Amino acid sequence: MLKQRDTPKSVRLSQSINDEEIKYVTARKTLIKEWLNSQHIYCELEDVPNIALLGSGGGERAAVGMLGSLHQLAQDNLLGSLLYMCGVSGTTWCMSSLYSDPALSLSERCDEVINKLKGPKVDLSKAVEWLKLRKEQNQDLNLTDFWGAFTASYIMKEIHTRRLSEDSHIIKPYPIYSAIELNCHRQDDTKGVWFEMTPHESGFSGLGAFVPTSCLGSKFEGGTLREKRKEMDMVLLQGICGSAIADKQMNNVEVVKRIWGLFGGKDSMRMEFVSRGKVKVCECVPSRVVRCVSELIKYADDPDPLKTWKVITTLGELLEGHVSSNGEMLWNMDSERWKRTSLVERKEFIETVSLELILTSDSWTKDWEDKRCTCNDEGMYGRSLRKSEKKDKVSITNSWITDALWIIKNIFPLVKTWEWGTVSNFLFKILDTNVPSSMASKEKIHLVDAGLKINSPYPPVLRTSRDVDLIISLDFSAGDPFEANTHTHTHNAYSYSSLSEEHDVPR
Ligand SMILES: [Zn+2]
Image 1 (cartoon, rainbow, N blue to C red):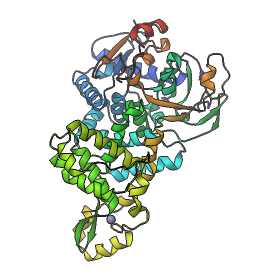
Image 2: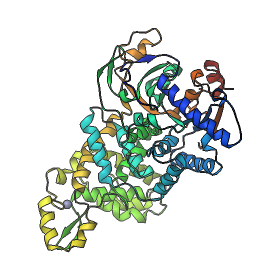
Image 3: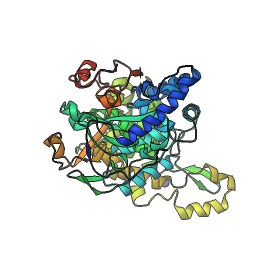
Image 4: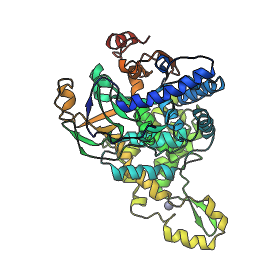
């Protein structure tokens, strides 16, 4: 019914919603009318109420909370009433998974996603494969790519390479994903800040400036398409929408921890190889450094310094003579002193070391770079495999050095540049009185977690043209959803009352 026409490849400047959304919404309302009839409520199509379900941010908690709420709505047979589903941050992680199988109903998919969350993580090699592909297709590889791959594989445990524009023909509650533009956010530009993404159009809700979602990320100039690029997939969308840690470089501790987390842990990279029919662990310097750091991070909160005492000794020996990114000696902790340090001191030390080792990876990864480590060398692997029992093959992740080196060479440098959500600005060089020149002068914009602004996706449903009658807002935030969830911002009063001044208050 909703066959996609050839969408014009240009910027649309208007406060109204687009024709395709109107068609989708009409089709959805026909279904809602049938649902109302089944509840013995009879009305004309134009009297069907526009009900929007909103889900707040709150990371994994919000994703789980949204799933639980939807499960209960399904139990009570209320899902049929929803016209819009609108998410911010963690809620979008669950939304992007929910819409992945058009053949399944929302409630069936909801149960599937719940089961996925209880299952194993996605194999690291799959996440690296996705990142490699992104690097090939895109010059702007940034931390959001890493974050998307991490979220999909380690939190949601599914890699969805579907594009948002592919969701344009399934008549479920119309999905609206939210982000904010980082520079507008920092400059307190309330009109340019909120960015919405729907199956049909993406753009600035406040400015009324949109492009077809299939063209988001493509290069525009003066309002017309100059260079078509591949539309982002759901993995990157999850990375953009849920990147609250992008806000301040001080959050790099969290990012650094997650990057190291890729190497350590039960489900992560196993630094093993087969020799004479036995599974052995790589004892080359880079592998040992990685294992030491993973161990330190694992026990960073443990009050007993003896748990990490031996690790500190080993790491100290491995890194002797290495210099930090600031030119000082990296290692100034002897193991006897380690026993006397406080928990806080040790945590700080572990944070410094794990960041410095990312910034100075060139120096300690030489064994891998120069191929001195032959532990999972293809040829050697082949030889040992012939001698070994077949069953050993199962326990081996053969390409781990290639994957590990790739992460070190391509993801580690991103911590230094600290760039997030880089996307071509479709308003570049556009001449229109409604677009501020500050916006038209930027070649790139940076889309990050909207929870940094308001932890509830009100702006898209307050657009007059969406004509929403009832907002059901589910809150999974740790604090007040109208206060941004960073501890550093003081002037983020994009409160409900100031919203109401700009938009119509919903009936
Ligand atoms: Zn080795």
